[in-house]
Length: 290
Image (cartoon, rainbow, N blue to C red; front, side, top):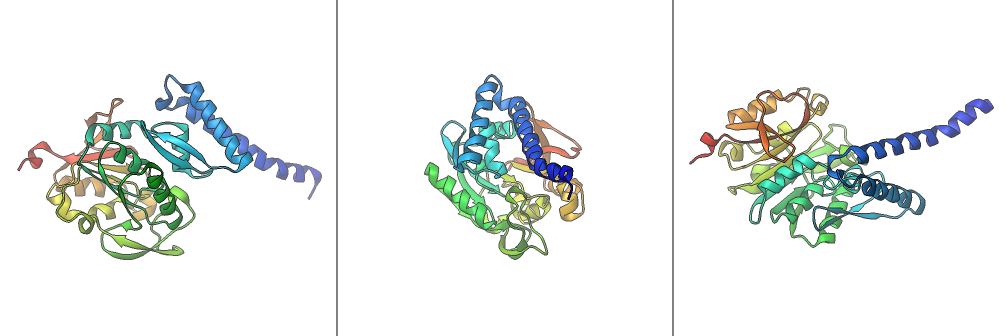
């Protein structure tokens, strides 16, 4: 290897870190949750990066008004909380409007527990599902850190009960995979909730949302799930070989309409949503009446 090639090889990791740092700065500065406190948010993010990289120490981020969450370097979902509170501003404002004491919230694909803690702080009863062993451990740590009474279930939600192959060591990108290195328990939402009414459910399962909905066909048919948040990006193409139209059709057949949040967390109807931001679904008013 020439000296020039060797120098380029040594500089490559540095260039990558600089690019990553620039991306973090841009994200923090532009995030709407940091409006009015951008410089403070930027200092917090840079301090976290320095502490984690130089001292190899974990950090704790505030979520909502009083919740806290452990943040480890390279854990995407947790880092997002450090960079902005709340990280999914519009979507989490919806839940602030919709959830309250006594309601049941199901967090499907809970990861380290951002939505779980958000819902618990709002007073909801929470059932959180996360199949990845390492991530489930972090979820439990965050629940314990706040002293919330949350039912944490180490399982994936699907269209049947049993077991399935699952990826590992991919943080928020873990998902079902036929050739996955680990085996995970698989459950259905119908078997999990029985005849109970579900105030809200968040589903983030890397493109396999259609399987989760098929596993709560009875609850959907009886319109016992009041509001559903669904990831609506291109990942379904790789996961199940389809866009989001089958999901929209299944929900429509069960009497659900689709929405996206406005800047205040209100829900605006969307007739034919394309790939993009998360979509919410709730029963049409006529269908929801007894």
